[in-house]
Image (cartoon, rainbow, N blue to C red; front, side, top):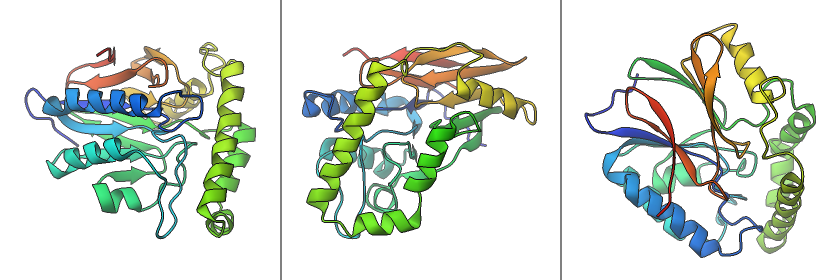
Length: 254
């Protein structure tokens, strides 16, 4: 169980999509998120980055993707000053391995995590591939997490491999933006809500916190639980705050 110091808060953010092809000014987008990190740092007890922070990431043994210098340096400031940072892989940055833990000191999670904060139970996950409700993506995720596929991909020259991945990412993002991917479908159709209800049948959680859907939502679920979609930093610029007593969704407008 993690206890917070007086006046300190735990922050949650998801779906920044640094480097996404649909973002016109990558430097401005990155600086905006880093400004928020500067804003919260004095009051931060811990920071949870809940997936798809990068639009694409792949680590070769001696090569990592170009860019993101301001963001990586700022997170290193957090960890160097003793602030724990927890990084969840999402469906876009699923190929984060050991570079971020070794270089900037974050703790990486590739699966859902259960934590107790000030006596409240939190279920935390990016949200992709949970339960049987998105069968097509679940198959795709098994392919991308295949050690064999990763081995073959790492044999491609980075200039070719990264460009190929960016083209795939661009296609995926454009497809999602033209569909109902960012629209709330209702409690009976949102697969993560259905998944949370399945979990509650076996074990109680006070809060379910997800990213992935690019929706800002905070509402009751079950008899005495709360369900949160964190939104994103592409359009909404929303984040979650736990002050030790209550959870809130907030919006950063500098």
